[in-house]
Amino acid sequence: MREAGVRFGLLCALIGFLCLTLAVFGFPVVESVQKIGEGAFGSRAGFARTMVQMTPLLLAGCGMVVAWRAGMYNIGGEGQYLCGGMAAASLFKLFPAMPPQALSIGILISGVIGGGAYGWLAGWLYVRRGVQVVISTILMNVIAVYLLDYLVTGPLQESKHQNPQSDRLPELAMLAKFDLQTDFHSGMMVAILVAVAVWFFLYRTVPGFKLRVVGENPRVARANLIPAERVQLQSMMLSGGLCGLAGAVQYSALVGYLSPSFAENWGFLAIPVALLGGLHPIGVIGSSLYFGALLAGTDYLSRSSAGGKSIIFAMQGMAVLAYLGFNYLRSRRAQFVGAES
Amino acid sequence: MSWFIQVLFFSTPTGLAALGETVNQKAGQLNIGLEGMMLTAAYFGALGAEITGNPALGLLLGVLSVVPLWIIQNLLTIHARQDQVVVGTGINLAAIGITSTLFQQRYGDAGRLITIPTFARFGGLDALVFFMVVMAPVIWFALHRTAWGLAIRAAGEYPDSVESAGFSVAKLRWQASGIGASLAALAGAHLALSIGGTFVQEMTAGRGFVALAMVSFGRWKPFGVLGACLLVGFAEFLRFYFQVRQPIVPYQFFLALPYVLALVVLIIVGKGTSAPMDLGRPLRSNK
View 1 (spheres, rainbow over the protein chains, first blue to last red):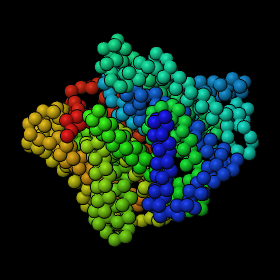
View 2 (cartoon, helix red, strand yellow):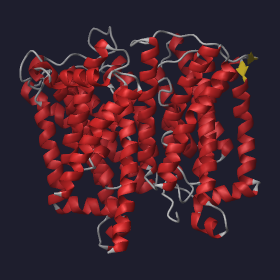
View 3 (cartoon, chains in turn yellow, brown):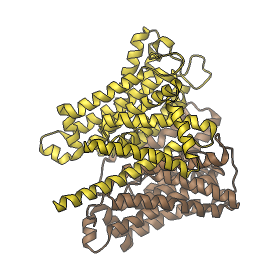
View 4 (cartoon, each protein chain N blue to C red):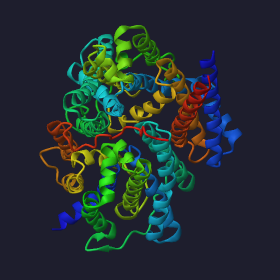
């Protein structure tokens, strides 16, 4: 019950934060909030926009949860997301004649494999060579961006060889859309299923429990005969796999082709989404819905006023910092209460 | 020789930021928010130069604009003992959001192309380039030949023993991150006021992250870090060189080269002994 109270408080705080940020930048608060709400939920198109923005945030956000819960600071969501997309597009390039249903499933699987392999590499570097995950994943993000840049002008370029982009997926091989007027696609269902599965894994299975123990304290884990290194490696692989899945879903549900602009910062945005979701898969459903709605809403807002689009970054950043401050104050109060009783 | 001048010029933002971050990491802190600090300084540097018409005043405004970020970051990491990676992520996002929003409000959504006065150049180089080159020996001397430097390095290795020797680790870390933040500010200002002559949204384009990685690549030694950053500058130079000339090897290969090389070096040397032992850990002995 108390936990629910805290969550409700957090939601209020987030909405308050939105108003505050808008006010700081001199937007008319009431009007802007109305616009954002309208853009995010006001119509069928708005709702669809929100869902479309929420999907990659939720998938990659769950990926972040898995790594960060194991104490692995995976900053490489962006690179893993791109690798997922590149693996998916490579599959289509290699087997363009596959039956469409098989192709669309194959794309999702190869996305998981591509991102997972990239995440695994960062995990391996840490476990075997002691390279900090923060540093290696940063480097690997940059490398992935250039790799994408190279692939779409080289091996994966469209058969016409005109633009730096890959061939378009045939409509039949794309993930199903719910209605043809909006972009709302079935990737959303995949994302929700994944979130529930990650929750089940982390909180209802032995490997998930071990993963959390390792994240809390690797020494305690080792003392209890949990192979911390192997768990860390697995968590990075799983984390990369989920980010890769986000890339494959984005590729096969929305965009349909790869180009240098395929990198849309989803892997970076997933980090604050995971943090503000309390590094809990169910919390991430909430926070990705919140930020998905904000992305959709601010997009709508930016049509009528300058500078609406980027405000979400400011929001996210300040929300993360405020959340940390709040965490600290709460832990201090808990100490006081503990000392009295 | 002109190519070397170009290389020096292009490596300056990464070099300044990485040299500052070396001091910061030696004191045991990881500034993931480097990118955000550079970006903030780039925007306010450009703004100041545009309003006053004087790039030096722009530089000043750029440095001042980073101060609040520095204070917030240190309050959260040193005093509230929150995780440095998380705090840095927050700083980065806030910086992207604040600079882009202010930019769009001032110059319109698509962002009008602005031209600002740039620094005077001597033989193709501006003062900040020379400053970067001079900073490497200065930082080396300060870290390895002064009592203060010994205390800083010890704060990154055994903070508890530094406390028992009568130093305040918190104070030392404030100082180290202050140096890191001011050099990051100079780096961002150089990007806008010298290389770009303009401000573009998210114009740092990952250079702060690269600087962070180059500190490990340079094994936390000022001259090593400078060398690593020259390599980044060289790769950027090659991009412009090869984009025009259509080489056999795709030019993306040269662009990715410093990062691949950094990764390979990190793999070969592994954790090694040069990384500060307490790097990234929150301060425990905090009263």
